[in-house]
Image (cartoon, rainbow, N blue to C red; front, side, top):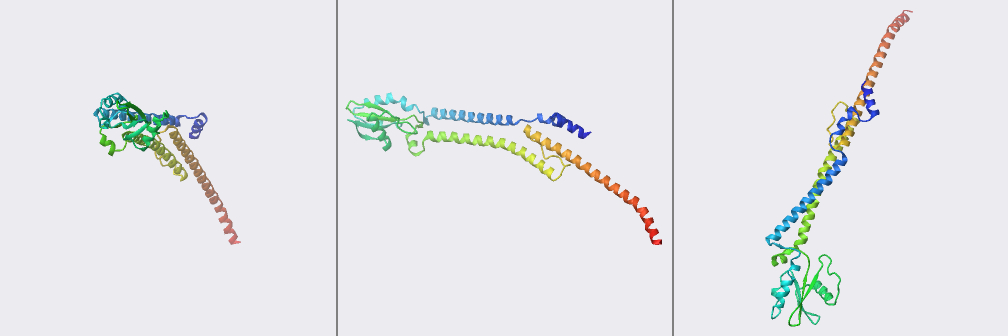
Length: 281
């Protein structure tokens, strides 16, 4: 009767034995949860990152990337109001060069920035720089000289001394965000990989129990993923069928042994009589 019930379910597909297959979450659900969880964590980290950046800007710890552009008019007005050029009035987020007749007389720029400045004076319109694009603004003075201001769209510390001793704020801050994103994705991946790893371990242990013919012991656990749970239940069904088959085989062996014992007993009596008569003869 049990065998007929099992075969009926095998023929018609998942029946009563597989009703628990509907519980848990499917593989598609696992992957979607992974994507949604990773996306949510990434969005939350980006939001916190931006909020913290705005707090640092409002506190005056760092300057926004547009500070140099917004300060061009005021800096130009201050330079043109000087009787004699004095670089002390130029904010620290600018690099400067004093130009006369196309020649750079003095400058606060490094060697690479001076090359860009000479290209700018030569009329080049190509972008300068590969990580931060360098821009130049010319301020004519009453003396006939020109002050060339160099700036870029980068975030810097409000304190000029910090710019000298600390690494570039924008690079560090973006690197921090990337590191946090990598950690969050790694943690999320590890969590869902652990779920799949535990489920597959349960299936492997169930298969090992079948190999060792440990058919009466309960299965090691349940799988949380629906498809893997269905595989685990199929292994359980196979264990039951194998156990039933072995029991039938053992019972048949017992019946055969009993029949052979009865036949031997039946043959023993006449053989004893024949042996006795042979001795008398």
